[in-house]
Length: 323
View (cartoon, helix red, strand yellow):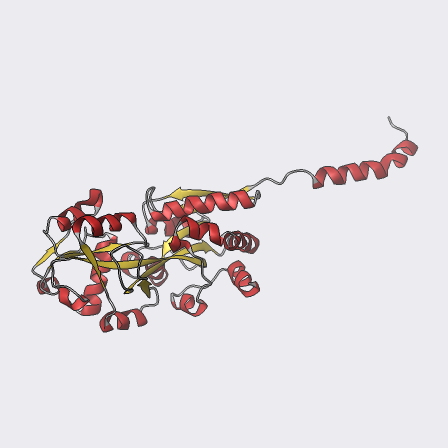
C-alpha cells in the first residue's frame, strides 16, 4: 500500500497526466448515412463526392453514401431513421409532405423532415429532330412523341406538361412509352420513329452532346405561358435557363423548367453536424463546381422552401444566417 503522504505529494502530477490522456484521446468518428439514387446516377456521383470532401475535411464525421432504388425508398428510410441525410427531388419531397401522388395512400409520417440546402437543378429538356417543324412547345401537338416508360421520370414530367397544357394523348399522332434503358429512346429518336422526347437531368451532359452531334437533335425553348402559370402555382418547380454555348450546337439561351435536388434530413440530426457539413461544402465550392458545373452552390430561397411545406433544419438556418 502506498502511504497517504506519497499519494498526496504526487496527486497534482497524476491529475495533469489524467487530463492530458483524456484530451489527447482521439474522438471516435460517427457515421452519417447519405442516401442517393442508384449507382451510375448523378445523385450517386454527387453523394460519393460529398463523402470524400467531408471525410477529408472533418475526421469526426464519417459520411457513407448509400445508393437506393429511388426517392420513395430514401424518404421512408430517412423518416424512420435508417438514413441521416438523403438527396431528394423537390417534387417528391412536396408530394411526401402533402400526401399526394405516390404518397397518397402511404401510412408514413414525413413531417419530421427538414431541408439542409438545395444542391443542384434538374431541368426538363425538350429535344426534337432537326427535320421537324417543331420550334416551340405548342408545336408538339399532332406529332409523334415518346413520354417514357410508365412511372419513369420522363413519364411523370410529360404528364406534368400534359396537365399544364390541358393536353391528352388524343392530341398526338403517336404517344410511345419507350424506356431510356440501354438508350432505347435515343435509338428510336435517331431512327426517326419519334419526333420529340424529353431528357431529365443536369447540364452539360455528354450523352446529349452525342445526340446533338450524331442525330442532329435540337433543344426547344419552353418559355410558355401555361408552363409559367403552372410553375407559379406549384412551389416544387422552378424556371431554369440552359445558357448559350452549353453545347457546341447551342447558339442561344434555352428557357425551360424543372425541379431541384435537395439535401434533406430529419429534425433528429443535431444542429452542429448540419452546420459543420454546410461549412465544409461551402468552403469547397470551387471543388464541387469543378467536378460538374451543376454543383455550383447557391444560398437557398427560404420563402420558396417554406412553400414546399417544409422548413430549413435549425443548423442550416443558423449557417445561412451567419454567412
